[in-house]
Length: 293
Image (cartoon, rainbow, N blue to C red):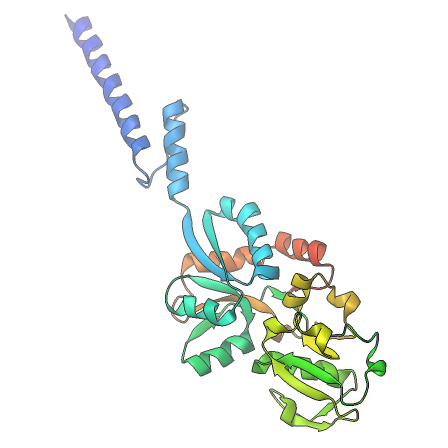
């Protein structure tokens, strides 16, 4: 009799164990990982691991930020447990508006001076992560001339119309000894030009228009992100180029003030700072985009 009871107890116990494992595999996340080697238990563990990934929506400009983040999404994020949804914007205003409206968790396209200027104008408080990720150096380009010495008097020169990038373009022209700015002008604008030997006609335009209008002007100050999209090479095609010594204008991860301690956004920034990302930037852009050490 005792033998029969023990056998019945074993059957009931085994059935209970199978039911428990099946129940775990049907739940998305119960906070535990089953380490048994049965196929059912392995499926349950995979389900838990998948459900544990943190979802994050990130706004980017297409190039190079979008390409860099795509590298992170495919090569680093899965192991880190981060599920990145990339949302591409060609317009920086739309990107920051999406951040303000909560359509995205963070964005990766702007440098700190641009963020600060935008925030003041739009009454939007944002937070920028440091160290930054990459620099899109500003270069001076021309489809008409091979050197700045060839540029004629009263040449038409376009520069970006946002304050920080206008300053950068003007500083490149000054360093090339084409113009001279007021000492300590920060940020500098065309009105701060105190010497202009060739009487250059400087016009501010949206950054996105710099490449399409390049054939129609004599010179254009263009940030590296637009240069890469055009197929040109900043380090090869620029008549003058911004120094990479100052990371102030390097692009970084930005989010709304108050969300900077969100673990998934901090994880995003950490992944973008990975040495593998820096090597990807060096290999792909050959100096047209520079990783920040």
